[in-house]
Image (cartoon, rainbow, N blue to C red; front, side):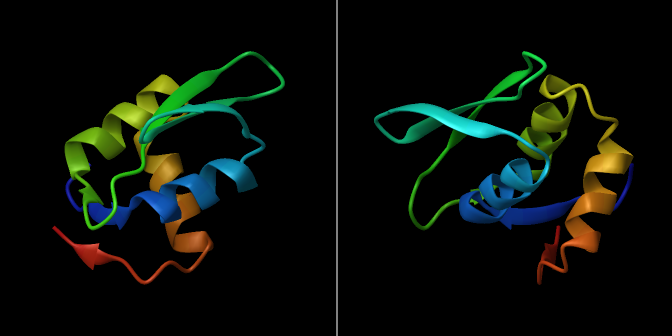
Length: 84
């Protein structure tokens, strides 16, 4: 997985919602999401800061979705992403 984009937190949250994840709670600047099948993920929501490619890979791993498939969703939802 060579070309991983840098995304804003709001873009990652939007992708997770489209994948069926629902916000269950927020603690400070971190939002926790849960899927109906039990998968869960915490996403940082820091204004002015991006989600680094390493964290994006970790988010894909935590939601048990191959990183390549997660990135296909990014391209599918047509987010204007900057390349790292």
